[in-house]
Structure formats: C-alpha cells, structure tokens
Length: 96
Length: 471
Image (cartoon, rainbow over all chains, first blue to last red; front, side, top):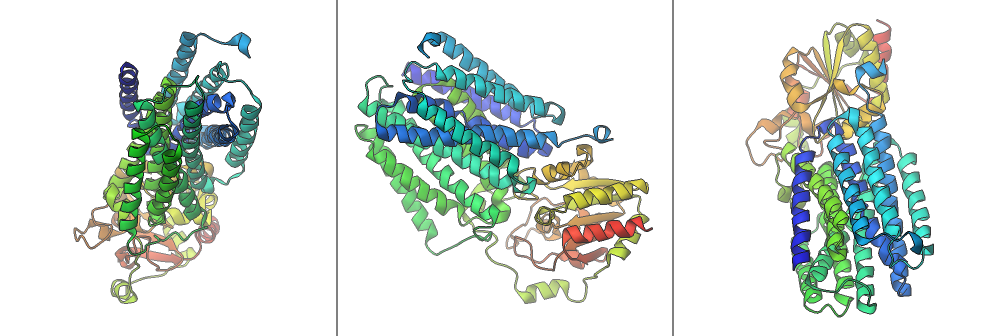
C-alpha cells in the first residue's frame, strides 16, 4: 500500500507539472509539442527492455521483441520528426 | 554486463535525472528559439533511461533487445526522414499507436513472466489494476491510431462511417472490457482475461474512431496521444518504475490539454466529437442554391493580382486545402513578390485548420515563412478591419459566418471563426462551391465583398504570383 501511495503521489504531481508547462506552449508549436511528447511516451521502452531480456519463455521473448521494436520506433522516430519540424521554424531576422 | 550493475539507489537517481530532462524538454517547447534544444534534452533523457535500464540484473540476454532496438530504430528513422511534411499527421498517429501497443504488449509479457517466474514483481492489486488499464488504453490507442492513419492517408474515406446500432455495439464492447478487467483483478492467476481485454479494447478502438470525420482528427490525435501517455504511466505502475509514471503522466497531460484546446476551438464537447458523427451529411442542392444563387462572383487571377498590387495589407487564411494541394511554397513566393512591392503580408491561423494541432504552422514554416508572421486567431481577428485583401486558401468551415448563429441545427454554431468577412475584399481560392466538412453552405462565398478564384490552390497562387510580377 505504501508503494502504491508513493506511486500515486508521483503520478498526480507529474500531471500537475504537465498541465502547468503545457499551458504555456503557443499554438504555433502545438504539432512539435505533440510529436515531442509522443516520443517521450516511448519511455515504455524502458519497461519492455527488462521484460524482453529476462527470456523466461518463448512467448514472452516474442512479445518482448515486438514491444521493443514498436517502442524504439516510437522513440527514435518521434524525436527525429520533432527535430526536423523545429529546424524549420525561423524568425524574419533569421531568414534574411 | 554484470560488471557495471548499479545499485538500486543509483538507478533511481539516474531515472530522476531522465525525468528532469523530460520536464525541461516540455518547458522549452514554450518558445521556438529554445524548442530545438529542448527536444534534444528530451532525447538525452531517453538515452540515459535506456542505458541505465540495460544494466538491470534481470536481463540475461541481449540478442532480442539489440534486434528490437535496431529494427525499431531503423523503422523510426526512415519514417521520420522520408515523409513529406504534409504527411506528418499520419506519422504522428502511427507513432502514437506504436507507443500504446508497446505498452499493452510489454505489460502482457510482464504478467506472463510474473505468473511463471519468481523474480518478478508480485501480482498484487496495483499490478492487476494497472495491467487492466494498460491493456484497455493501449489496445484502444493501437487500433484507433491505425484508423486515424488510414483516414489521414486516404486509405479509408474521410467521412464518418456510421452504421445503425453503433452506440449499442460500443456500449457492449465497453461493458465486456469492464467485465474482463474485473475478472483479471479478481483472479490474477491466469493471463487469459488480459489478452481477451487487449482484443476487445482493440475492437473498441476501431469502432470509436471509424465514425469520426477527417476534420475532427486534430481532436482524435490529441486524445490518442493522451492515451499513449496514460498507457505508459500504467506500465510504470505495473513495474513500480517512477520514470515511466512521470513521463507517461506528462504526455497524458499534454494530450488532454491539446484535446481540450481543440474541442474549445470548435465549440463542441468531446462527447459530441466522439459520438455525434458530425460531417456525415452534406447540404442538399436546394439549401446551397438558396445561399449562393446569383450572388457568387468569380474572378480571374489577373483581377485578384490587381487588387493585391494596390493593397497595403494582405492576410492569408490557410486551411487543409492548402496542405492537400502542397501550395505552401507557392504561397511563400507570392509573399516575397508582395513584400517587394511594399505590401504587408501576414497569416491568420485557426486552431483547428488542418488535420492536427498546429498543422498550418508547420507547413508554412516548411516553406520558410518566418513564424512572426503567423498570427493566432485571437491576434488576427481585430486586424481584419484594417486589411485590404484576405486570401482564403483551401479553408471553409473556419471562415463560415454561419458559426455566429445560435441555431443549434447548424453543426458549427458558436465555433470561433476567423472574421475574414470584415476585410475590404475576401478572395477565396477553392475548387468548387462544394460544402466544407461540416456539410453546410458558406454564405461568405456569396458576400458582397467576396470573390471566388476557382481552381487548384497551388496553381492559382502561382498564377497570382506570375500576374503580380508583371505589374
């Protein structure tokens, strides 16, 4: 139960931090915000690594491989596509 | 890699570092000048979290992990670099689905291992509740994103797919999901209810997104984004891993805020967007005739160029049609010619123009249009009175004055719009008088100060530019 409450505390506090920070993002950057956040949600990769590396049964190994592949695509693709978009934003003075 | 195994406290401290980097990454998104850097901070945080995890003592073999990392990394990199900017909504939808799906599968694997092995987390109440949540949300976001991808890519019709009894089918699926969750929580000795739950949730994801039309995709993508975050947080509860919980809830918050902003920008509740099937009916010809008959004036590119040549201030209001026609580079050329003639050019961007939040901004930025020229709706609206010419490119519902009516039978009633009709002249580039997504005629096209420029957006803008150059 103590572990549960600790985890709940972290969850609720992180939600609040998220709401505070994201309300400050202008509509101009809503797409990169979304794809950048999406890349961060690929953090699920961390969980998949442990499960797929333990290799207890064939079934979980296959599941682990699929999960690692999907999560990695999410992380790598998410950060790269966000980077690509953000690189395109220039101010008037930068464009010259 | 047993030699480098870290103490538990050391691992947790490094996870904390990663979580801090994620928070900084999202904070930096508030300003385009810091955003590139902050995205890199987020990637660095992810790298730390991954490397730390690889030292976990429970990992006995690295072949599968390395194979997954290589294959997944290649898929992600190729998708991120090969797609056209106009296809970014689809790609974001796919990545969303991957994240949600990975959470569900990984939680399933963790459950299987916990049931068979001895060195995994105990299958207690927190485990089963979080596992049920991950299965449900992960399943919905996997198939829901797949349908969103299909609609955005044009593989499935953009119009809502409605069939009788869908609410009953959805309610039944939702009830089955709840029952399976209860089974999993009550009897955690078998993984069967978990996999049944993943399957039923996947069916529910299909059923929920199919009836939603293309123009409502900004809301759907935001919501699926929130789901993928919550699924990751659920995964964190299963594994008692704080960095998963923090990152997942940050993303969940981002998705929910964007969902709320998009719904507000359409003056519709989330329930209405999800279940009303708006956009399934289009205006009858009599209705359209009543609005348009004899009042619509068509112009040629030369005439419009003449108007713009004499203008002091021109505002461009882009919509999804500009994205479809890939007209953003042509628009940039037109802007350059106008500016060389001393005309002030700005862009008015409606929050739900396009198929994802901020879609138009990304396209215009791609065409090298400086972002200080891109004005939000609230900023742009007071300036239309002092604007000589507004050029509406491929937008319809977001400039439809019928939104100002309070008649609830108008699907867009109360939706905030760009007040382009207040300008001296409004020029609308459009292929035909066909209704926009909301399926209603647009009285703007018949207004006294409106001129229609019928044709493909890219071609018309190019012809306008050519005509301007000759003046």
